[in-house]
Amino acid sequence: MRAGRRTAIDVFNNPILVGTITLLVVIVAVYLSYIAENGLPFVPTYNIKIDVSNAAELVKNADVRVGGARVGQVLTITPEEATKDYPHPFARLGLALQKSLGPLPLDTHYQVRLASVLGGKYVELFPGQQKRPGLPDGGTLTLSTNPKLNHNIAFVDLDTAFATFGPKTRAGLRSAAADFGDAVAGRGAQFNDAIRSTRQLIGPLESLLALLASRNTHLAHFISGLAGTTSAFAAVAPAFNSLLADGATTFAALDTPALGNAIEQTPPTEAVATPVLQNALPVLTDAAVVVQALKPGAALLPTAAQRLDAIITGGTPVFKLVPKLARELQSALVAVNALAHDPASTQTFKVLGSSDLATFGSSAFIGLGAILRSVASEQFACNTIALWVRNFSSALTEGDNVGGWLRFAPIFDFNAGQAGQGFQQATPSADLHINPYPKESYSECQAGNEVYSAGQKIGDPGKTSTVVDNTAPPPLVLARGRKAGLVP
Image (tube, rainbow, N blue to C red; front, side, top):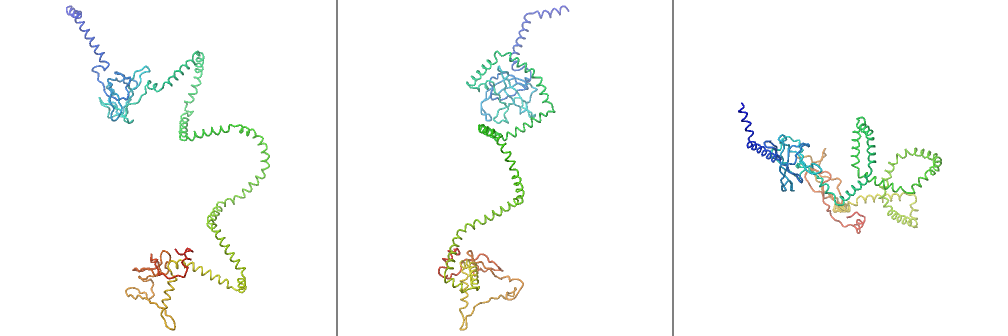
């Protein structure tokens, strides 16, 4: 036993062996410290790549966090050229994450954030909600100009924010900071008093906040109602602004000495107006009675106004002809006056006396005028009367010393296959053509121009010609017809 123990002690007392072991331990420690920044050996990781638009101040081995907890590190930072989906240069980061974190959802987002105000940045991951499929080991979350496909969340650095201020703005900020320092210098007692007063305010403020937080105050309903009111005002904000601006203009116009003088004169004016109104009260009472009595008539005013409007509308064209009628009537009255003062006319009326010959003559003249007006268009358009007289006279060209003969040629249809026209029957014949009221106008002259068509034709035969035989009219008839508007 003593021999074996002495042998082990002798081995550890060997300086060469102890030095060799110590050297191996140091080499392993140095190796581990060298590679530790890239992850411990034999520890599995979940490796992915992400594209960021700006990797400034981001260094290798920077933290990768989820919810503030470190879950990995940045292993590589590689610059990349513009792509079809993202037309700007960008950086591609290689991340080594905890194996338990993968696979990340495909709708995961990320952001390069500032670690502190002194500098340093880290990558914050925001895992998405999409469960399957996940981002495989070695996969890449890319950039895109489409907001729906872009995974990188934009972030503004402090240096970028401060760089937005120009030299004048920075000088102004420095001046404001210096003035603020001068303002608070030597005022420690006042600050202490303000802090003490604030401390005394906290107690009542807590009570007020507790009251507002109580459900009985319905603060949530008030806020929602205020939000609804604000939304309603937002829709009419331009009109509301215009109202305020116009109101300011109106109040500025009212800010004059004349308005003040008018207000000062109001009490004396009221003192004078009071007895005047009291004296006018009986008159106003009578006026009220009159108005009440006029109410039934007022109900009829709309109908009366409509009828009056119709009368005026219908009478306006007639009234336009009154001046012409007045001139013609004046000429007629002048002629009547001349007739009345003519000795021959006076003698004629004396001969007529009380007989009705004048009335009969005037009636016949009026009737003849009506007949001529009725047949004027037919005569001028179709020469009806002249053709009838010519044909009638030609029918009397034969005769003897006793008198003329009227020629006519009756035509009978004794067709045995159907009811003939030579006997009375209940219905018209199937081939009967008759037009008892032919159209005679500028558009057509039916009498004598009917075109034969098979079958029965009773009444209007349809469109016919306007060409008729021409006869020589008396002199100046056509000229007078054109002047009267009866001949085109």
